[in-house]
Amino acid sequence: MDKLKWCLKQKRGIELIEPNKNLADVYLEKSQNSLASMREVKAREWKITTAYYTIYFSIYAIMMKIGIKSEIHSCTIEFTKIFLNDYFDEMDLKLFNDAFIARKNMQYYVNKEIDDLNFNNIISNAQNFLIKSKDIINKINEVKINSIRNELMR
Image 1 (tube, rainbow, N blue to C red):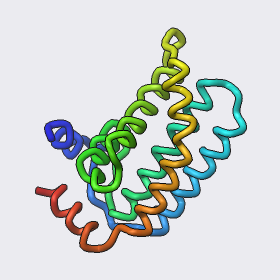
Image 2 (image 1 turned 90 degrees about the horizontal axis):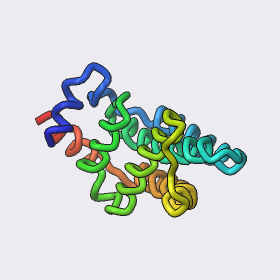
Image 3 (image 1 turned 135 degrees about the vertical axis):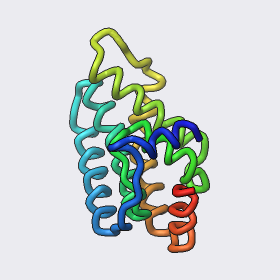
Image 4 (image 1 turned 45 degrees about the horizontal axis):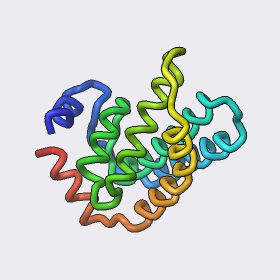
């Protein structure tokens, strides 16, 4: 919860916005585009980057449907852990976090590698994460959305 409190205080951290189904659809499309790119690129760092953005944009689509904005990726992960754990299990949350770390390491450092097992897990599960996110967007109701929004602002 301390991390969440920090995120709520940051300028580009977590904030309430108007729920927006149209933006949710746009982020789902961005997620689909990232998945398509992941399948086409050959370089490991771009495969991981596009896999991560497949996952990230699918979560962000859910957040737009709820009306939550976050421009700090670690805050988006924290929000997901706390408020979307009814929908995502421990393995899903671990995948999101592992993909975040792998993307950072592959994009920003030349001497940090990702092991094949972790790499293959992220690549092979990105599509399933997107599918699950689409299902959540279709199932989440106003009662749950209001509950999340109210709990976030306590």
